[in-house]
Image (cartoon, rainbow, N blue to C red; front, side):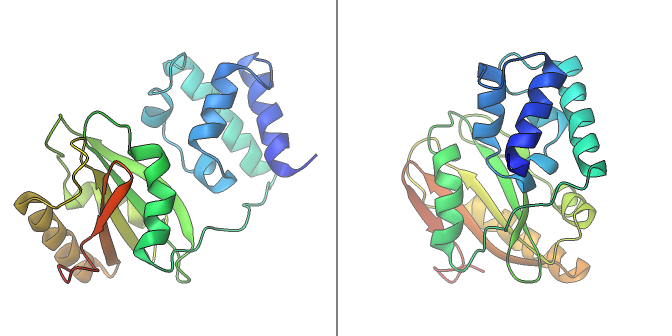
Length: 200
């Protein structure tokens, strides 16, 4: 049994669920790597149908136990291009009906340490503050970040607000010492990299 299966069985026992139950499978579908799981928040867990505050706390307790058991993090996903970031994000973000602002936290070798949803907006507006982004980045000792959000319309072209928030993030990152490598906008199966288009 590998480490991933060990954690899966640990969750099933913690939640009194079968290893193949909806909640367990949905959990591991949304967070397909040990690195993703280890950085999940209570708020993110409660977005899964069937997981309330009590179960979310049970899952976080199981994660803490896994940490104490020294379960190693599997090899990290390396971001070498905007396409790599898009390939990681599109499967989860292309069908979302409102804007989700997500950040990928990277180490010095551009390996993904974690992925976190920073804010969830309305149909056409994503509300995010640099303070929230960099608080999460500092907590994870990130060397750099990639910001991302989706356009439910399916058109990934950035709005003036998207460009403005990107500039604010870059400026804040320069002060703190955490590089903002890109801001990727997902629209259906398409993506737009502000870095590729010279907007960063």
